[in-house]
Image (cartoon, rainbow, N blue to C red; front, top):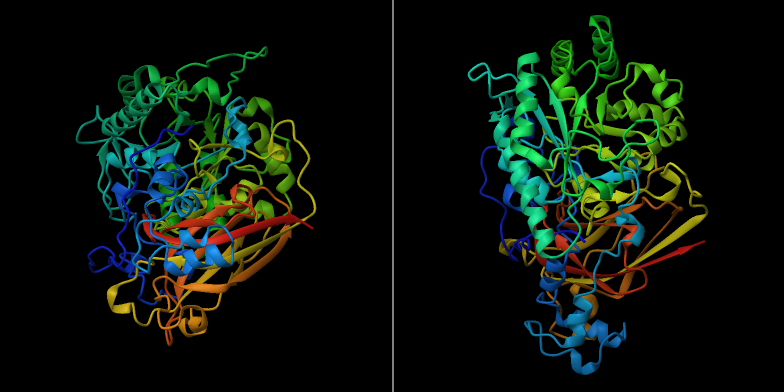
Length: 605
């Protein structure tokens, strides 16, 4: 069971977003986004708002925890939806409807429906008896950044926040520190971002892991799942020796420095359960890399770049030069379960790599565009086969200065364990990641067909019917309450999908349509109802890695319809066939008092 963090704060209904400040040019598309200001054309519904470090979301611990279930019982249900549950859904008795719109004390029957979890993870996803390569890992990119990637702030406490949010893989960019050579620094290189001491970052990780271990012992539960550090080294030999020493000094017995068990061939093997409460390090491996190989890395990256990506190409050139410094033995020895390599050919996915030229615990560390290209060229089966027994980390394209994200779903579909996401913004990808790892401890076992001994791949078609009855307490600004026209839009994300996700939407709420049901006391726009419920349907190839993202929007005239609430669901964990209140998050990932009453029906066709 996942260690339960303190319940996330509820964003009050009617609350405004954060105080505004003049956004920088590179981040104007999302920084301090006003939910009711028309969105920029670029990004649209995919965008979110900058997350608050104190309320970080996207790692899997916001929805579905025991604290969340307890909090749900205290939420309000509109009079219209209580009537719906009694008269149409037949879920409660007439006497359970209670008082009018402002009723806040509900019957036990209503509370029981409120307490229904919107996350029903299959039991297999939290099985800890498999090798590390058979899991997806909730992963953070540029963990040290608090905001803007070109000149934002860095903060060691960001590591605690990401781990508390559910991330189990965090990134450290380590550099030499000219001002204090014995204390390397963590920063976003070649940008104007501030830096923090490498030691402070290690200390923050150690403190959070220790707190989780103590909580697990107090609850008499298994130790928390391990934390991976994705170490991006930019330091010279002396700095690397200090990095190795500081990791050992701060993480102490939590740091894995040698295999916990060995197979008959002398190679390290371990299951997830063997590594509870430990910290593992991904250490870069260059083998026999020389200057020519480094140039090949740079050339490969440049070929993937568009002509407008001059800043990105310059960054790659400088980083490739830094990589000419080999990893010192003291640091290399810490890559016990993951030695990170950036291949210069496709031999690894074709299964033709020379075993003597790769480390025994190789982690292929590649940018999203390289994998997209392989998938488009028909290499999906090769990727699945490789990732069944080898680790892969996929990171976002180049200098994504606005902290935008890759879509993790197609990469999960080929078995990539680590899809590194910028959680500084709660966008669509962070929402999908939250759904993938909801109510888990940040490691999710892959479906059987993606493992070392593959089981049968799902076949046939699945039909999804989503019925939407209404919502309660949509937190819209007071000055929009009279003219808000809420509707629900849903996008289906499928691993094999090409192009944009399949989108369906309800009509916008029209109070006058319910005069016969409610007379003059029509439900307000902040608590809309669709009676009879609106039905949205999809049909798709059966796949355990299919997701639905839900947005609440307003049908504004003469403007782009703004989104202001969201939630996402992995369909294998959706409550099938049962009316459920889905907790809605604002665009920063903070749970609100708003809920959506809906019913999923999934069946094979």
